Amino acid sequence: MQRIILDSTYLLPLIGIDVGIPDEELRTLFLSKNKLFANEISIFEVLGKGLREIIKKKLPSNRFQIGLSSLRDDDSIHLITLRESLEYSSLIAQIYLSGLTDIPDCIILGTAIKFDILLTESQDIPQIATSFKEFHNLKILNWVNFKKKILKI
Image (cartoon, rainbow, N blue to C red):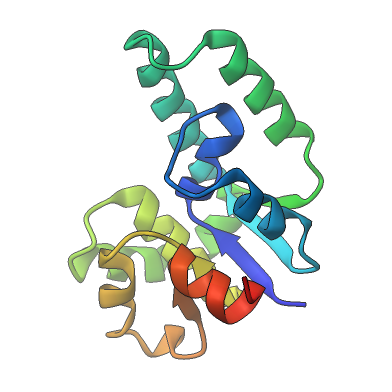
């Protein structure tokens, strides 16, 4: 069993936003024996993206609400609080100063230090992480590599 921190991308389908990953593949992730985590900042991002899609009339409000409820009540995803993230504020600041300017990504990467795998579609995160010794034991994978190497599908 591996400890996996999910980037916001993998939470978006829960509220009805398509990210190009088939539902049955995502279901495999959520039903795996791995321990899944998400940072509360990812919930904030999901909320923001969902509301933008509702305003554009691309996402039904009721689908959004159902997804948020399931995210709130889902015990398979353990949340890292913003308070816990503050433990890594110095590292998060260093990540930002090294060129990763998306603040939520800085927070997600900074807290990923205590996990086995960071699952992300970001191309900037792996590039920045290579310059930090703190992340040498962290596997940073996108979906394609994750499903091949970890899920074996």
